[in-house]
Length: 229
Image (cartoon, rainbow, N blue to C red; front, side, top):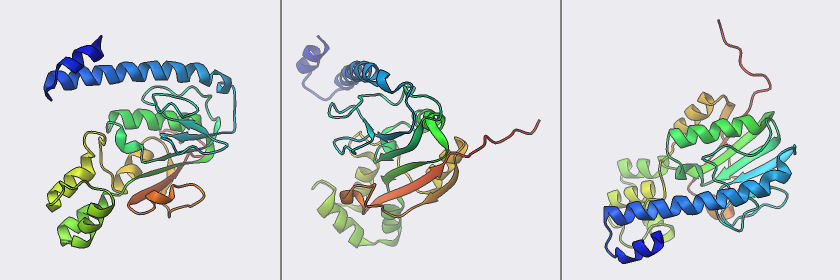
């Protein structure tokens, strides 16, 4: 019904965009329901390896999580994860965090990641590196913009600011842009420690994302920090 209504509104209007969001959220809810049912077999499992926001890059031996139907579990990770506390050996996401609203959805997801990760284990993320294009803009480094034009950005990106805007927004897909300081801050705020940049790891990361990605590792502490009363 809603799809039929959307098809009748041909122009890009606020009403059309609102209906499109409603349809998308309804589809996400259905996919999440399916994924939640499938996840029942993992609810008492431990030693799990989670690949969150996998897209079509499936990792063997991992639980691949995404809203793409090729994933092992179609879960909306804006909601609680259906796994036990301290049940995961590692949690990994690459080019996913920038698709969540910051700070609310990001903080909620990190809280869940912290909960299900074993103490002493690593949460590893990769996000688009926004320091690079900003430095290039300030320093008028045209090499970056030429490279971005050839590799990533659409033809309509001509001026430096058009490139910067596309990097930040990717249409409406990206919700937030990251430098190292920001994930370090929000990860530590969520309880993680030993937050540090890392190099590209060919055994873990996608080769086509080596250039232009900021990789960050964080560790869940062995002991919960004590509060001073």
